Length: 307
Image (cartoon, rainbow, N blue to C red):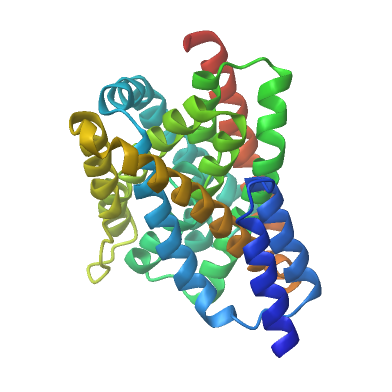
């Protein structure tokens, strides 16, 4: 156990180094998950959640509110179309593949909104069981890991501008962590655009939760509001209108970038062989089909409609 703890702590410290990028951090975590038992398994889930939120808020100290508002305004129509089209196609795909209703909805909403965060929020609303939740999360985590590696490569291959890539990543990649990781790999402007639009999408958890409660006829489910998004907006406002904090903001952004890399490392450590096996073929096919749909449609839209 001591050796395992030392290995994990050393790997986490390595991910904080400047020569390790976000994809590499995820890969290191994944390799450990498949080879060395995680001695911190019980605490990783909570730590990942807290560290991701803190890192996103920290990134807000490096963004300008005016530029973010412009990016958010441009992305709102993509957001509305992609969310509802993904939910509808996800419902049809789930019926076709005979995936149970709860699992199908969690995979669809995770793809449409913000990955694991949406699944965690909506699972309580529809009263999903542990198996359904783990299947939904497993599907999303697997696809997130693939996206973090291939999206920056595809963006470069297609000569997407940083703004175009940021819009595409925010729409087509599931989790906020992987969106930020892929965009950070592509460039600073891509990161700012992607995080702004992704957090805008995350707020759709609220109306989708209300619709889910009606559709699934659940009255006891509690809606989880992503309050940290408002802290992110507050950070942008401070950075925009209080120039005196800029020297401090620089170091906060550096710390947030390191936090993001460690977050992706922790996510990688959760992608165990057991989790991958638990997903099942049909839910994975549904997840891949939805991901392919939203990736291709959003890429075509971005290439022709976004400057």
